[in-house]
Amino acid sequence: MDQLDTLWSEREIRAVLQRYCRGLDRLDEELAASAYHEDAHDDRGVIRGNAHDFIKQIVPVLRDAYTGTLHTLHGTTIEIDGDAAGVETYCTAYHYRESDGTKRVEQYAGRYVDRFERRDGAWKIARRLVLIDWSLVQEVPLDPAEAQAGFNPSRRDRSDASYQVLPLQGPDAPTL
Image (cartoon, rainbow, N blue to C red; front, side):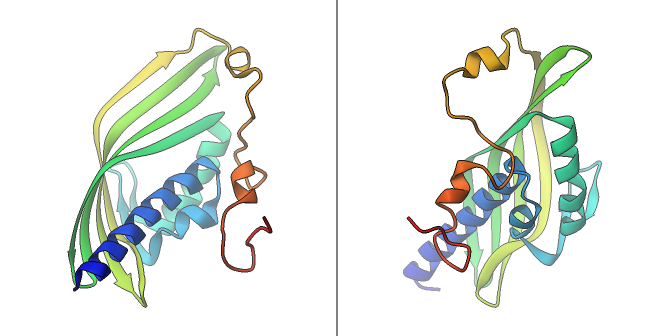
């Protein structure tokens, strides 16, 4: 593998990781699932099995149980060997919910430990192990509507403003 192929592969792998997070936060099942090969395995400890089945299960949970989520990626280590790559990505997920009249933010910090494979020229996740390093639940003392007053609102579906500029290619590409 030459240096240009290595750099391009690393870029594609990072794009897959971002697409997964964006798909979860926008409750876009198709986008989140596009990060995985059809036969991919996902292991979160409490949930193990086909990754596409996991996406079909988790998106409705995120929609129904939480008012908002934010998945962020931090340092990523990528080691490529031909058409396979070992990838470790530090991540933090924030989940906002209200229950019993109390507003809470749940924070999960951990790592995605992935085996990526390039099949038919496309890098996607073949196996994922999710490791939790720590978690924290905090009550939110300020009314979120007050804190967000005057800001542009985010949407948790395809009406979100980001869909006006993404994707930039293909039949669904917006006209800028």
